[in-house]
Image 1 (spheres, protein in one colour):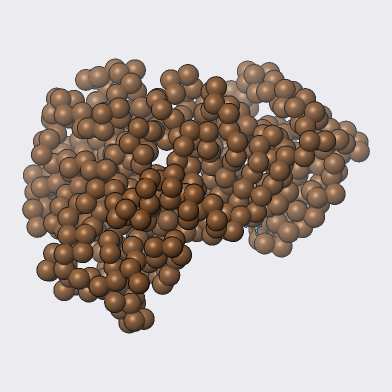
Image 2 (cartoon, rainbow, N blue to C red):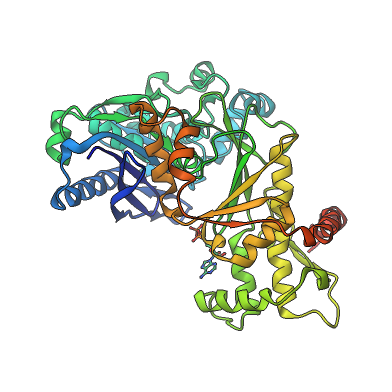
Length: 501
Ligand code: ADP
């Protein structure tokens, strides 16, 4: 049976799955990856460990009787916004500097001496800060000149390194490149003049290929090491945010998903950079005429975790039992008897408002207010925030359905609250852990002709996956509408106080 081999080289683990032509997932193998945290905020990984993880995954497949000849194509997703300098032979000249490492803040300011922030935003669709690859390259040149001189190419995503090992090609995809600070988002090409003006050698940058373009074939050497058949085609693949978006079935205008992890984001396809709203960022989507507009949320599952700790009688931890107790407490509350409002900015906020000083606040507490109502107000507050970013992202477009992924979607009460507050159907895929792998497999399906388009892949292989569906309750609509209008007034009213706390 032919398969697509789909690897997701994440920050905590590398995962490999084989996806059959009917969209079913086989032979999942996961290998953990180590991260080195330095005292000054450095976050680094060894690229060779990514490769070792891929070798171990392949070995497991062959031991389990998979035939390398059944692998029709290899595709990838991976962490984005890294800085991975390699020498001419493809060896790392130093550890990879990860996206979460903000060491190049000063170099980001240096770049802004060459180009205004407004211009950068117009070209790249995003703001520039010290976590991005471009300033990290300047950091490398300034702080480690020997390594910079030995650098033959700089790769952006963990998967780009594995592709270099498999094929010898230095490539990256426009989704990964969108948060480097060096890509013209509209044309999906490097900002060559700017890069050179800032003193970086242009030939260091990898070739930009679409996710569904072939980067190369497995070389004889790589075939010896991995066990893949020499000549197996290898796709460029896509950065993990793009893969997750496709895996969530969000490939057309009007579709949306929300990732409710510890922090979170809401994302929606868009035809152009949404200039209206500060705090959004933009990536190239896999369909070539679309972008992904993303609203980052500082408060998501972490607010849920706080409510579980405070209201579910478990001051030490927010383990599964605390979440289950919280769910019971909240279930018995009716929105019609809810007095309490909660502004959910426990961790400051990035979107819908940009305010690191904002904090969590209750309003409307009464002598009758219960723990369940207070807890429910927290999750409702995050749901209201999500409605606000939905409106920012969607503009004039209507949103028919919201897909929820991430650990927070395990709360049925929260899922229903989101459906009610946003007045939108909410769906929760049951195999959310596989979404990035399915998203990168989609690129191979398109290239192999197994799917006519990304939307066709979503229709055939994602929508028939098991889903939990939550419909908005029409009886609750007026009360949530009114509560939303009140919620919108909370932040502007309280904003002047936050700086004084
Ligand atoms: P990340 O990978 O970003 O840390 P996850 O996707 O694991 O995040 O989501 C973490 C969130 O999942 C928690 O903050 C909480 O909202 C939710 N969560 C975790 N465990 C449970 C549970 N047993 N029941 C309901 N929700 C849970």
